[in-house]
Length: 144
Image 1: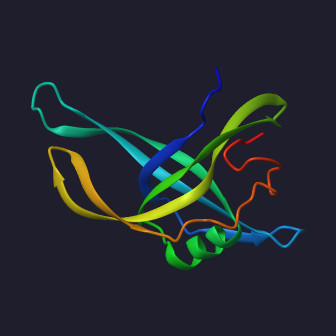
Image 2: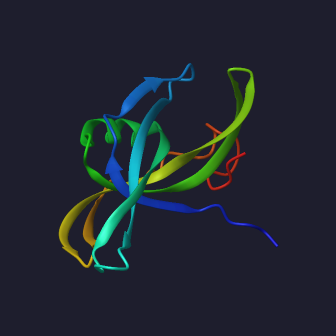
């Protein structure tokens, strides 16, 4: 059975988008999205923040340029993409990390907050149709 690697994250931008150009001339953007986990307090029933997950996101090509122009710290976004894991050494210890390789970023506008659940509408970026998988090698939906 073939597995699927599709991730959707909605949260707030943790800082500005950082863009650089690779040797091949491809724009690469790095950003972080904060996804806050809330749960109801059993005594009061009021939703309370439990913790925040910081999701590192990487975007390529025209999506990277559009993200850098349009997004700023605090913006509410939904990122669609695939997870890529990596191994590295830090202070002599082997560690593992991950990043979300974005193929779509939507800027969301918060309309109402009811019962601790955000109800938002999304303002979509144009689809990232230029990515053919050549940056990572292979199918854009399959990160190696």
